[in-house]
Amino acid sequence: MKRVKRSDTKPEVTLRKALHRLGFRYVIGDKRLPGTPDLVLPKHKAVVFVHGCFWHGHECRQGRTPSSNVNYWAPKIAANRARDARKVKALLHLGWRVFTVWECELKQAVALDTAKQLASQINNQSNGPSTRCRDAQHS
Image (cartoon, rainbow, N blue to C red; front, side, top):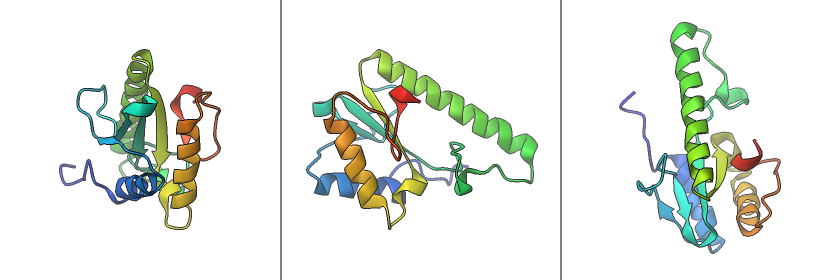
């Protein structure tokens, strides 16, 4: 598991480049915040987590629990999800707006659309729920 990258993953870099192109400036992995969010947008008081579908148990094709060694993977992924929920709760308590973008939403064909939708949500102070980027306050 130590060989699994924690930062600068392909989905994260894809989102960072797209948001930068859209004019957003951010801090990468601010360790002063709970959960060390992947992107911190201080001007907007918003943080973004870029989750791998498999590791964080997304309900998509890539997020399915493996059929082998279920006794290991099911609790591990459940613990990841519980930790994610604790991070979100702590950040919300501190007044941050929390967004989660999934790896499957950053495939080449839809990455720019995902970034634009996220940008729209970040700029929108009302935080309405979205179809693609999950706003943690509404999950």
